[in-house]
Amino acid sequence: MNFHSVEQENIEYMNRFLVFLEQRQGVVKQASIEAWKSVQELAARSGGAVISALLPGPADTSRLEELMGGDGVVCHADDEAFRLYTPEGYVHLVMERMAGEGCSALFFADSALARDLAPRLSVRLRASLLSGRLSLSAAGEVAGCTRHVYAASAEATFVPARPISITLLSSGSRASSAIPGGTITIKPHALCGASVDGFSQLAHRIVMRRDARDVAEAGIVVAGGRGMGSEKGFALLDELAELLGGAVGASRAAVDAGWRPHASQIGQTGKSVAPALYIACGISGAIQHLAGIGSAGMVVAINTDMHAPVFDVADYGIVGDVGQVLPRLNDAVREFLKKK
Amino acid sequence: MHLVVCICQVPDTASVIGFADGTIDRSRVNDVINPYDEYALEEALRQKERLVGSTVTVFTAGPPSSGDILRKALAMGADRAFLVSAEPRDPWQSALLLCRAILSVYPEQLPDLLFCGKQSTDFQSGQVPSMLAELLGIASFSGALSLEATSVGVRAEREIEGGSEFAELRYPVLISAEKGLNIPRKISIKGVMEGRKKPLEVVEGSIEEPPCVILRGIVPLERKKRCSFLTDAGELVELLRHELSLSRAGEH
Image (cartoon, rainbow over all chains, first blue to last red; front, side):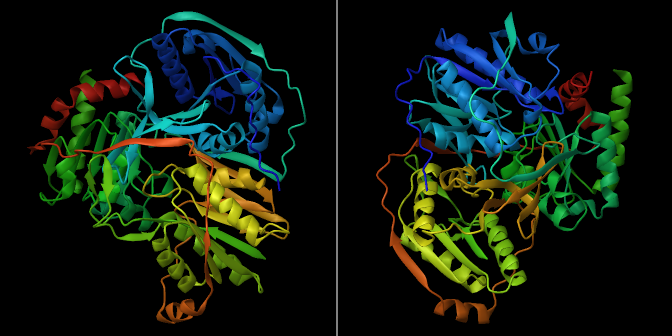
């Protein structure tokens, strides 16, 4: 058995950053573009890093320059083989790029793909693997990566111990300002080296939901718990989310009752969300649920029990039954949007 | 079929975690099996029940106190357990310790199917499964929501942002379990009795390689906010004027 621990000591690692751009069905993900901007900002502060990007799979690149901002080269590996993610194919591609460019840092937007791929790459590159938001020193240099641990009861800062690092940037670490326009050059990535046959993949496909708004990516999340009473009770939340262009989340109790799919669960055994506005309806606020909303901005709670722990982490609260409060709230929101 | 499950212990979220001098005060912490690892173990046990003659072997890399969770795993129905006695300092060290232990137990041929939890609930990094698969040089599938074993491999499904991903992979393969994969069984008294008779081996886990990542500091988060109670939904909308405006702006 071989350990794939490749020591690449013959390569001199410079201040070169590589940003991984993820495409889904030919569209470059917004989160990847945000990651690119964060890295541009970082490079501007630390002075003189060279940034390039890697985009695997066929994708529409016509508006990339305008969307991305900043300076750099985008290597587009538009081979059909990269349309869908396979660990072996993507590992091969990223390794080739990292070595070819002599990069010392690789950045991803945090995603299901990145969480699957990055640990493999970290083993191959003997790299430090970090995730969360970049924490900066007083001098503006990267001092590590900060994220919530222990059910969001604490925040931990991790620092790399290896010369090469891989960072998964969470959605909370977006660039604070607009990136000045520069020159983005898109060039095709010619595959060299071995074929990208997987060692094991027999079949592979993805199916997108019609309502593709994901709680983990939404700017507004309205979530329901046991207090919604039934699957039907969530219709009020679907209506509110539709009005606001947000996504509907659920507590573990609501998911375990079969009212909502697991994909919408927020909390310790569900997702962590970081919306600007979080509205918790009929959710008591067990610590396991609160673990998932540690990065939410404004928190609003609606619950019949005024002593429910959810009010301890809320900015605004309404004590009342969701069946009565939500129809009034939906009407008020409709009025507000009409006036706008 | 040889089935392997890697588990770890985590503090029960119901227990109070204190912080002092930038570290965790574990004195009032009650340790349990990481919830995601229970889904992993349950899935392995179901495969074992489906294919007569299969065995489930459980590994953990941790302090001697992790023996407790291995006993629980044996009580749930696993056949044997290995405690790799060590204090891994980052996910890479954990993966390396587990990899070496698995290779020493299976020197000739790797187990067909290996399971891990998707992530631990304490540090939530979720890095060990893919690292372990890479070290073992095998295929993997993270965050499985459903799984079907066939004669040549597995069909698995996971959730991705806004949809689902389906893959069919050949053995040997490592699966990390997501909540929703199954509902773990309860431990029976009979299981506990039987579990006590099953082999639990302690092996010294030595690691010379330094960690790749260092925990620089940990600070408690003050989550409490002062909640303003309102009576009227209209009033709430006025107060949320700013947030609501932002929401629609993102749409266009």
